[in-house]
Length: 422
Image (cartoon, rainbow, N blue to C red; front, side):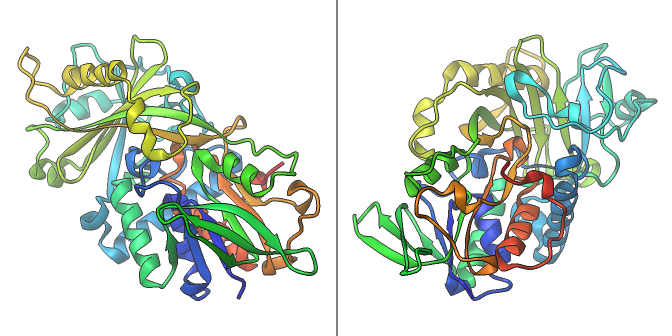
């Protein structure tokens, strides 16, 4: 079995390693992560929202497969306890009835777009307001006249704590003897006498030591940093991977009105709001364990830091204050006194593409630069798995499974033919 090196230990990289290890020795898999802190970007700071059918035709099969993989993994491994897996009801709040766009679309939250626009139309809004009024969410304050609409069918949306899920996947990989190089950086590749990819040089950034790892397969899953990783390894290539970054601030709070008995009685909810502030569409998720996640303030112009951990220095206090205002408005007591506990402030960078869908597939040898070639079939290749935007957690397990199947030359569990690098 060919040795595989995965560049990036976020949820896409660890998911891929997890599925690879089911069909090849874990010792033949190496995962390389540059950040000194694991899961320091979207894999640890995203909302963890999962959807089954909120995707356009190109990604529909992948989205459905991934949703099912999330369900099966949670049932097998006690995901509710370990990483907060829970079915969720999705709600559009303060959006006039009937104004939501119909049909599935790819929405990437650029400049304030709302993911609620991607809902496949599970609810028509008839009687929903009355239903929610009868079973009021104790943690959510609604102003008189707010329009409320359920936008998901039962069993088609869920959520997780992405940090805990990522940690679980990595733990399973390491139990399977997958190698983790961390913090480390891939410096260069080398070829054999036939001119085909045969090894990759990995530098340990703490000890400054370098190791040549024999490999014939490379998977680039470095999230928003994927283009930089590719350019470093293939400096003569004229191909620029079309993956850029979308920055997003977030806030995690605890409210005395979101308790365990509420979880058991009402379940979790995903609330997508409209806002009077341009470029801001708040997203609020009640999680198992008493936490409430708030995000929706995104920017495509925020510069990408050298490492994910460097994002902490770039947290905008004005952005955080905007999220705090939203928290006080819809989660607070409704008085001057603020009884919300701030658990965490965050800034992460999600990988996005202009076409609005992720890129999954083998990078053709002609795109690797002068004199660079790979072995044919499952014996070798350079692959890309990035560009998921705000759907990285939702599509993570499906992506890991399909990419593993690609690399190993097995039949694919989902049609991702429209997601290749074009």
